[in-house]
Image (tube, rainbow, N blue to C red):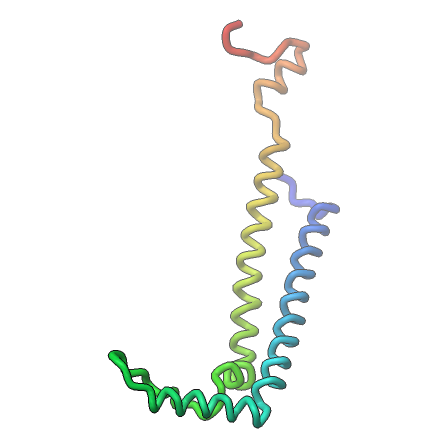
Length: 132
């Protein structure tokens, strides 16, 4: 198998980079939206109302009151953004990279001709077929 860097390799790597950049942009946009939406006084009031309802709730199963005074999405987007970002980029890179390697191998295998066809074509003979 040759190790040259051709147009196909350039296209595969370009697709890889485009997907990673698109995911990074999406992560930053979503993080910003979450912080904008959940850091308002109204969002905090809704969260506190929900926590109060959980405290007052009675039934066969007792729910625990979340200890956080802020919505979990806000804490995740503000305090753990870089952890989420790193995990998403590494996971995406691994999945995308493995997928591209498998696709390239499948395409290369599909283009390869069986050894019997190449010999028969070179000698001007028909390929071996069952029953002949």
